[in-house]
Image (cartoon, rainbow, N blue to C red; front, side, top):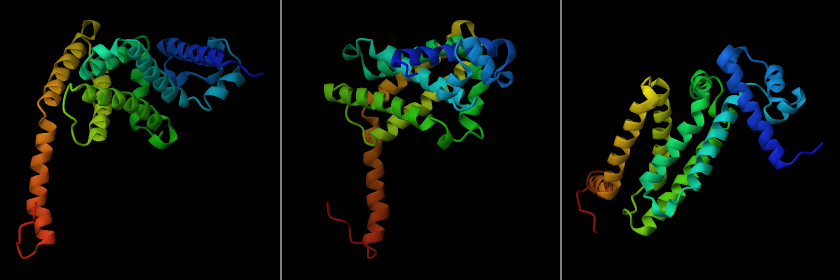
Length: 232
């Protein structure tokens, strides 16, 4: 029987809630798809329609958590916010989504990023793409508003933001301070540095220096072995 998108969404969220609850008591490795389906209140055959094997629950949950964080961030008054505030809000929203599942995520994060489950066999590439598309769009809007100059290699910078985001998650998982206060402070401090870098046009200046050195010391030797300077 065909079900609605709403019912599908509710079923998937029920599965995640079941995994989180059962993992606290028994650990993820000891769970079976049958026990998860029973706790979620869905048929055993139904759960396999969403997750072909138990390991895909890990990437599936991470995918859902990123989407949920983006959805929450999009409800903010983004037009009134700086890009770094938007990025900051996205990360804080993601941590808020992950908090109820911190123990499950801590158990599964190693499998998600460094396991035999390769990037090609999970939805990590798709998850990163969602993250990058959202930030790239907001990045372009901030440049258009004149918040900071357009830096070179925007796609590379956006990709680094994903790496930073993942780094924050690892830091948060190890943070034993009350209400993850150290993580909050770390994000705030690093965002200030990032904002200063964007506003200072440093990326363009670094690129200009690198381009000059490349032109003078590489292209000049390749194209002009006799030492004739390249014309501007």
